[in-house]
Length: 634
Image (tube, rainbow, N blue to C red; front, side, top):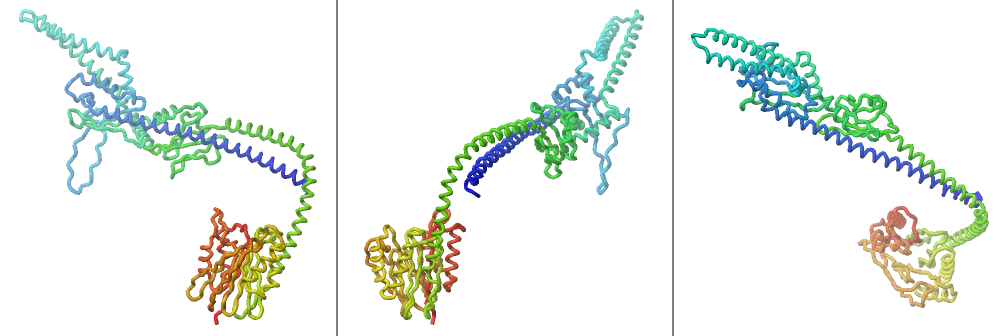
C-alpha cells in the first residue's frame, strides 16, 4: 500500500474510530448513569414502603396494648355497674384511634378454667364455640368493629340512640313520680295507691323496652356466623402476609378475663402502603408475598406489571423479570419482619430516547467535521507522501546496510568453540539491536587458550566498527603478548586511529598450565566458582576502556583446580532493569552463578532464564554476553 493511501487510512482510523468509540462510550455511560440514578431513587421508595408498613404494624400493636384494660366483661353484661356498657364504646373508639381503618373485627375469647388431666392422658381438645343463646360468660364474641365505631360516631344523630336516651329519662321520671305518690299515699286515699301501681307498671314497661333496645344494639355489633368465618379467613391471610399475630390478654380488676385478637385487613393495609408511594415519574409500586402472588397499588397497574414478567426468586426473595425489561427499571427489597417483597417498576423510555437523539446528533456533527477535515487532508497527504517516499527509500537503504553490517559482525565472531583438552568452553551472546556492541573471541595455540570479551560503546554501525578494529588487533597480536601487554598495544593503536569518542571495554584472559592470567580494560569483574566449596571469587582489576585516556593495565594470575568454573560477561546482565527500573545487580549475578549447575551449557541456560524472569519477558535494552570456561577434572 502506498504511503498516501496509508496516510488517508490512518487519518480515517484515527478520526472515525476514536469518535465512534467516544460517542458509544458516552451513550452507554449515560444509560448506566440514568439506570443507576433510577435504581437509587427506587431503592429509597421501596425502603419508605417498608418503613410505612412497619410503622402501621407498630401503631396496631400499640393500640391493641391500650385495649388490654378495657372492661369487655362489663360490656358483655357481666359487670355490676349498668353504666359500664354505655361508656365502653367511647373508650374503645379513643383507644383504637388511627388504627381503626385497618381493623375488621375484634375477637374476644373469654378465659376458661383448665380441666384437671390425669398423668399420661392425651391433651383435651379445645372447647367448641358456644351455640347462639348460650351463657355469654362462656361464649366467644366477634365484634364487628366498623359497625360498632360507626354506631359510636353517629350516636348524636342516631334516632335509636336518642330514643334510648328518652327511655332512660322517662324511667327516671317515673321513678320520681312513684316515690312522690308513695309519700302522699294514706289509708284514706286508695286512689293514690292505684296511681302508684300504674306508675310501677309503666316503669317496668319502660325498663323492658330499654333492655330490648340494648340487646338489639348489642346484636348490631356482634357478627353473624358466616361473617365471623369470613373474617377469620382474612385473619389467617393477614398473618401469612404480615407475619404478625395481633393479640393481647384482657384484664379486669387485675385478673385475666380473656384474650382479644384483632382481625387486620391485610390487603387494605398493603394497599395503603403502596398507594402512599409517590408516582411523579410513572413509578408503579407493587408487592409480592411468599407464594409469589402480586399485589399492585392499583388493579389498573396489574396488566403492565404482568407484561414485564415479574417473578419472585424463592431463595433470595428478589423480584426479577423473566426477560429483559427494555425501557423499565425494576427494583425490589424484602420487608424486614415478613416474607413480603416491595418493589418499584419505573419507565425510563423517555430518558433513553433523549440520550439516543443526543448521541445521533453528536455523531452526525463529528462525521461532518471529519469530512471537512478529510477534504484538506488529501492535498496535504500528497505533499507528505512525496517526502515520506524518499524517507522510505532511505530507510530501506539503511536497513540493508545495517543488515549487511550485522552479518559482517557475526562473521567476525568465532564459528566454532575451541577444543582444549583441559578446558570446556560455552558461550552465549544476545544483541539488543541489529548490530550490537558486545564481542567475544578465542585464540588457541600451543595448548594456550586466550579468551577476549568486550563491549563497545553504543550500538549499531559505530559499535560494529570498533568491534572490527579490536577483532583485527586480537587476531594479530593475542598470541605474542601477555593480556596486559595486549591491552596496552590495542589502546595505543585505537588512539592513533582517531575514532573520536568511540571506546571499547575489554577483558583478556589466558589459560595455561592450570592457571589463568587476566587483564581488564573497564569490564565487569570475572567470577571464579570453586568446585571444592562452591565459593565464588571476584576478579576485578582497574583500567580505562580502550580508546580513552592512556592507562597501564595490570595483570592477575589465579590457580584453577579441576572442576573450577570461570564466568566472563559484559555489563548487560548486571545492569538489566526490571519493569520498575531496578537493575539486576552484581550481587544477583554472583548468587545465580553460585546456585547454577556444574556444566557450562546448563549455567548459560540458568543465567538466561534469570534474565527473562527479571524483565518479566520484556526485551533487553542492552547486549548480554556470557563466556564460561571450566577446567576439566583429571
